Amino acid sequence: MPQPHLMIHIVPGKCDYCGCCVGVCPEDAIELMESKIALIEDRCTNCRKCVWACPWEVIEFHREGVDHLPKETPQIINEAVKF
Amino acid sequence: MKNFDYDVIVVGAGPAGSTAARYAAAGGAKVLMLEKDRDVGYPVRCGEAVSHEGVAQFIKPDPKWIASSVSKFRLIAPNGSSVLPKLDGGGYVLERRIFDYELAKLAANEGVEVITKAYVYDLLREDGKIVGVKTLIKDQKVDIRSKIVVAADGVESRVGKWAGMDTTCHIRDMESCAQMTLSGIEVDPDVLDFYFGDEVSPGGYLWVFPKGKDTANVGLGLSVEEAKKKSAIKFLHEFVDRKFPKAAMLTHIAGGVPCAKTNPEIVKENVILVGDAAHQVNPVSGGGIISGMIGGMIGGQVAAEAIINGEISHLREYSKRWHKRLGWRHDIFYNIRNAIGNFDDKTYNNICDSALKLPEDKRTLGGIFRAALWNQPSMILDVARVFLS
Image 1: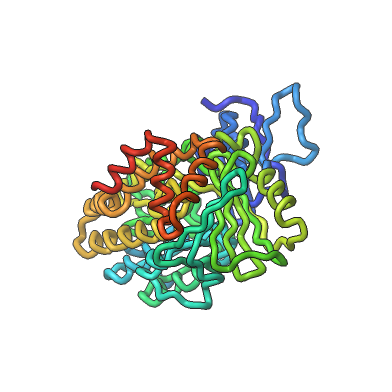
Image 2 (image 1 turned 90 degrees about the horizontal axis):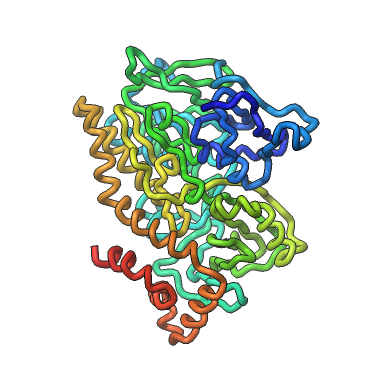
């Protein structure tokens, strides 16, 4: 079940767009293009598999009220890409 | 792209996709291949090593895409001792950015149309049936119709999921990888190096694959279960700082390799999966170029047969032929991978010591494997099945 608060953050600009995170995501909650990556907030369950899989430590997990959020705006979209 | 109606659309122009497209077109189908990146073959997310025997069944080896010809491999144990067996039949370290181009050209020569910077964002459905793909081509929305969709969209595959196949790779099976192409270093251009042990890559291995005598792909993969504790990039930086401190870094990439059994479903209705998308990777070596091309070839042939016969249900034959050709072997390799994943540094050192006690002419992969079995008897059953089948 999707949770109301997204705690997964993809640090903008650091991503190599390799797709390792997409391969382990059980919810199909990551949109990956040639040089764009985004979380689909409606689907993310904060399971953290993408955080562990990322070879470059680009994806961070922030517990609400515990960890500092990154200053940069995380790339988040609200649903699957509707261009 | 005169009209948007094809027999087969292939999503992804890597080796598996190009090979699927080539054989589908050769079999008589009208084929379109779509690539999300602006270039076929770039960026390269691959160690680039293949066997001569594997690659030569698809394309004549050509110096323009061979960075190094290799005839030996070196297995380096955690204590630094090593064995240097011959590589039966020899192999190559490729220039994938040229190699992938050549494979796409072989497809084009069979009549395949190719579009790059074409991102597939969904399947096209009519009355609940899949009738093609929805794409974004150079930022324009374009729906393209086809009778069959071949998903060759790599480790990040989503096409299969949209068709109702669960292609999620379990984290214990996914290898989280990082690689640099280093130059200004000294390497043996004839030898593939594999480093084992907890310091370099717990449960996986680190590779140094030569591209000439002064350049190499240096990379590693480790299961996500291990990467939880320490990431691939950290392991790689530590090794490179220690081993090649003055190297120039020509490329620096991340990647994921699904070292699993073949995905439980690789055919659903009129959609088939090939290559990494189908988890057609050798689970022991993590190599997926040749096995992906074999999957692509079988998939392409079956897709063409289905079109020519007008029987889409014939696609089920793809799964049968794949499992008969390689899938059964990957199932067994998967069990061997799990056994190797439990090796500790002491086991690797013991295997290396045992191998070094063999006479030099017996230091083959088979000889080393027997030494490994001696140290890990539970692997014997799995191996027996490979050789007795």
